[in-house]
Length: 256
Image (tube, rainbow, N blue to C red; front, side):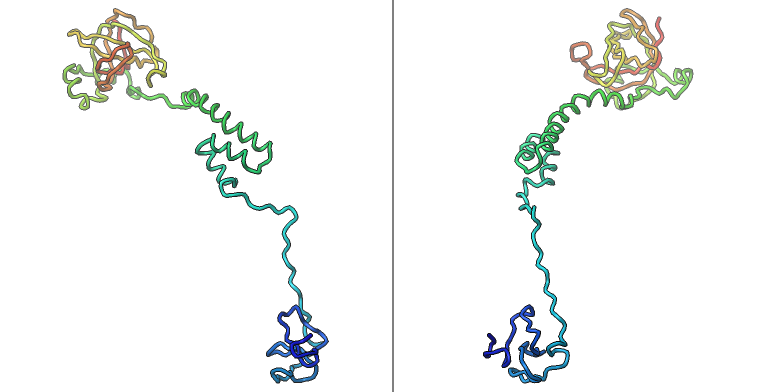
């Protein structure tokens, strides 16, 4: 029923979906009526708004939710947040994984990778690090041996101990008597090879790192002439007690 009785006298549609195709439509107020003049606002109905001339109204299709629609999980159970937590804390991340709606096989796989994988990486880290790490260069083997030896000068023990920073990497030569020899494999310290505790003629102790490529023939009691580079003064525990030693990296060691 219209706003003013029957549709022939006037009917004001509240929406275009309520179109009455058999009646004329007022372009001003939207009323439907018979005749050429709108009974409500007295507007003359143009030809394009008359019954039979108006374009049919196309109803908009309402979007329907998909059949499998799921409500998004809370923010702390969303995938991006769980992956972020796994990078920070595997234990908390695994808890969130099992609270999520992930498939069971995904939960099991992520748990194994997060817990077992982290342990495996930690177990293999040091061997792999040693394998791919470039060994440190303690002496300059770019110089020919004869030139290397010529650049080595005697350095005073007292000067080395008092002002070690002034002599770092200086080429030096000294004659020592071997007190003991210990082999280190890189786990105790960064150096791998023989570490020699030796005394000079005045009874001062030195630690000599045997950097020769063909070393391992120095014995206790040997007298050796060391051509090498000063490595500073450090507290060493290679022989089970704490002592400050001047460090010498030996490039060439002459026995006798």
